[in-house]
Image: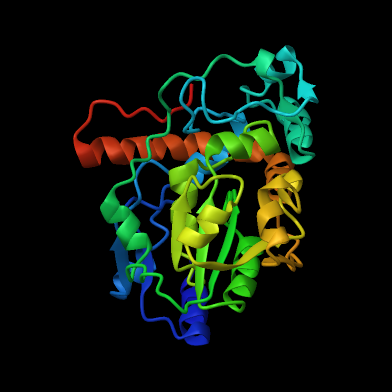
Length: 323
């Protein structure tokens, strides 16, 4: 960040403060990226959401890992579709070779699942270090969700909401225009993996929930809602409109299928054109195209993050979750 660039940003966007997480941000030479901002007294820090970071997320996409999924042994509908990777291909997805990564992600971007026979059973635990507290949920949903009251026109939609992006914002904005209250269901990891296959979702349920909660068009969120929207659910939540998009990122079988049958029969289903072309498949493809460069960058940043948390918490070691 040069003085000229900083001056331009401040003038163009009328910047008062520059905000970053409470961890070091260094360039390739080890210099503080925000040194100039600090000299001007404009620098502010906010606590990091520990256990998940951009570095961690990119690392998951590079290794194609499912260790962060919240799926107990024997549950969660993690079975994939019939077309699958072979056991040899599945073993290769845990490596970071650019060629192996490209082969795996091409299949995943096309919605090809991983055969159950190629996988070890899920244990009743998860490797994600991200810990969700009720306070964190309140912070992301501030101000607190208001209560659904009689007379409100409640709009409901559910999905995976993985890697919350512009396409999600677009459909939620459109949903908000259809009523007074937008209620969003975030499907569990097993259901998302069942329909999208591979290592999907990149973010686990708790991580995806925070992304949706932070969107200003959303009033409240249902964690792990039923896949099929029933008459009882519609009545209990006073739902007036059920929304789905024309692009569902691998959840195509949900569109107009059994999940929405009751809503369609009741005449309350609305299909909204997905205005944005951004998708999780596109994001994965961009990562794939830069796999070799990103692998080196991620490995270096993970070491730096581990050192930061070791110092912060007084630990002798810090597990990055990668071999």
